[in-house]
Amino acid sequence: MLDFPQGTSTSEKILARLSLVALMATSVSGEASAVAFPESPTYVLYAVPELLSYPELVELLRADEPRTDLKAKLNRLLTTPFLSNEAHYRGVTPHRPSSPTLGPFLRVCLWNIERGLRLEEIKSV
Image 1 (tube, rainbow, N blue to C red):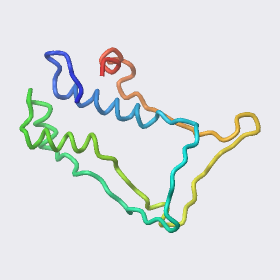
Image 2: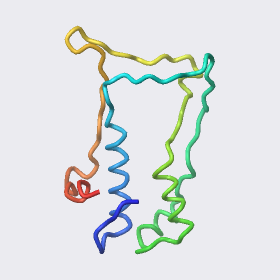
Image 3: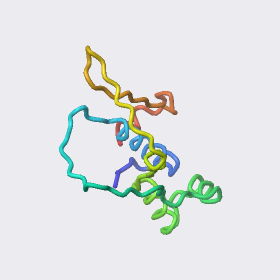
Image 4: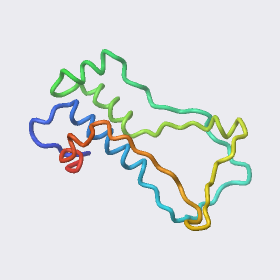
């Protein structure tokens, strides 16, 4: 669990956690790793955690400390990966770009929704 300075609002905590999740998602190592897969792997088609409803979002915005069940739901949402293997089941193969200069590479994009206005808070997380 992340520790936040006293007085940090719930919405600021949520924003900081979402920013951290986005940052972690973009931290990709270019090194290959050995992973053993079965001959014919089966993949989950689509799996997502239960999303927050609009009233729950409003409650998170207004409450200094959310209800226990809402806090647990938020934690599941922030720590459970969203999985979609729909492309795999449609027969789409991954695009693996390579160049003579760089070799194999991966393009990564990040959208800083706060435009750096909360950089210090994001760093403190």
